[in-house]
Image 1 (cartoon, rainbow, N blue to C red):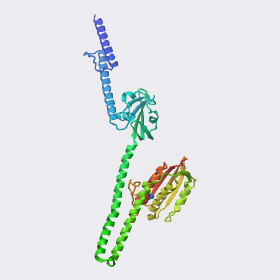
Image 2 (spheres, protein in one colour):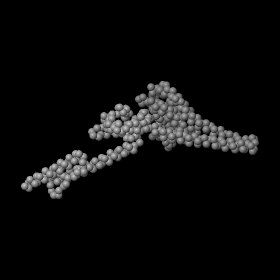
Image 3 (cartoon, protein in one colour):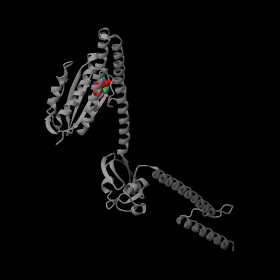
Image 4 (cartoon, rainbow, N blue to C red):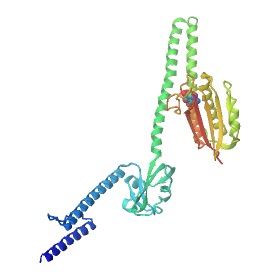
Length: 387
Ligand code: ADP
C-alpha cells in the first residue's frame, strides 16, 4: 500500500515537471512547481526546474531590455541605419533610413534589397564615400558597416552619413572667417587712409602747401602703402575665388619640378628625383601649386640658413612629390590651410589654400607636417597620373 502511494506521488511529481517544462517550451516562464519539504530527489527536480524558469525569465528580461535599448538608439540616430541578412533581405530600418528611401517600414522589412534599389549602395565597402540620389535626398554619403551573427546567419549593419551636411557647416565657418578677415583688412587700410586724408586736408587749408610739404609727403606714402596692401589682399582673394577650370593635358612633371628648383634666386633647391613622370593635369595650375610650396620651404629655410630638397617617386598610378626643408619649422596652428592665415609680415596667407584647391581639383592630396628627425617641415603632394 505504501509502495503504491509512493509510486503514485512520484508520478504526480513527474506530471508537474512535465507541465512545467511544457510551459517553458511555450515561453511561459511564470509558472512555478510547488516544492514539498523534506528529502526527495523528485522535489529537488521541481526546485531545479523552478530555478531554470527564473533564469530563463531573467534572460528574457535582459534580452527585451537590450533590444528595446537598441531600438531606441536606432530611432534616436539621425543617420540612416539598415540591417540586412546574408541573403540581402532587409531586417531592420530606422526612421531616418525610412525617410531617406521614402517607404513605410511595413512595406520594406523582409524585402529584397534589389527591387528596393538599395543593393548596390549598401554593398559599398566600409568608409567608402559616394554620391547617391535617394528618394528623400541626394548628396555625398559615407558608409560605415559592421557584421555579426545571429541565428547562425551573418547580418550587416550599414550606417550612412550625409557628408554634404558636414561640408555645409564647414562652408559656413569658412564664409564667416572670410568675412571677418575681409572686414578686418578693409578697416585696417581704409580707416588710416580716411583719417590721414582728413587731417592732411585740414593742415593744408590752415598752413598752405609749402608749410605742409613734409607731412603731405609722409601721409601720401602711408596711403600708398595701405592701398598696396589692400590691393595685394584683394588679388589673393581673386585668385582663390576665381580659380579657372582645369585645362588638362599630358606634361612632364619631373621637368617642371627641376625647373622650379632653380627659379628662386634666394636659395638653391636640391633635386633628389630622377624618374620621368608624365602626368595629365593643368600644367599652369600645378606649377603654381608647387611654386607656393617651394617658396614656403625657402622662406622657412632662409632665416636659419637651412636647406630645401624636392624629391618624387611613382606609386602605382600616382606620383608622390615631397618637399623637405630644414627651416624654422611649422607654427603650432591647425589653420595653416585656412585662407589668409599667415605668420609672415608681408604674407598673403593664400599660398597653401590655393595649393590645396589645385591639388584636390586634380583628385590629389597635399599635406604639411613637421620633420621628425630635425627642425623643419615636409610638404607631401600625392597626385593621380590621370589618363
Ligand atoms: P603665406 O606664405 O603668404 O604666409 P601660406 O598659405 O603659403 O601663406 O602659408 C601659411 C603659413 O603656413 C605661413 O605663413 C607659415 O606660417 C606656414 N608655413 C607654410 N609652409 C611652411 C614651411 N615650410 N615651414 C614653416 N612654416 C610654413
